[in-house]
Amino acid sequence: MRIRINEPKENGSRRFRLNLPVPLGLLNLPLTWRFLPPEQKQYQPIAKALVKALKEYRKENGSWNLVEVHTHDNQDIIIRI
Image (cartoon, rainbow, N blue to C red; front, side, top):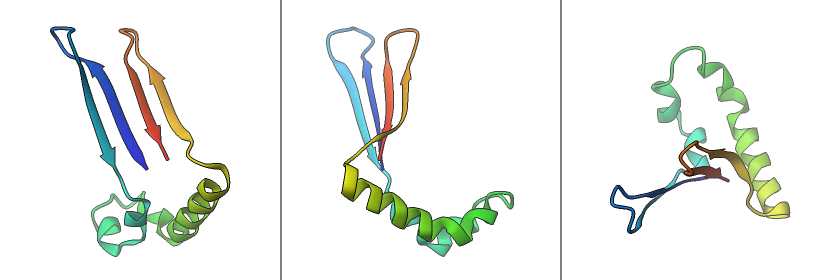
């Protein structure tokens, strides 16, 4: 999964771009679940199946946007898997 931020700088001459890769494999690590609140830990048993299903879907259909937000000041925020 990749989080992309593409925003104009304050002076307007260039754009600020930030790409944050977030590996889906982190969901399978016990360390990840240790720091989550108790109400989120209920999803740990299905996390491995979810990661596998997302990877299979991506392999068959390519990348897809999970979230696309267009803000009032013409900024785009996209979370792509």
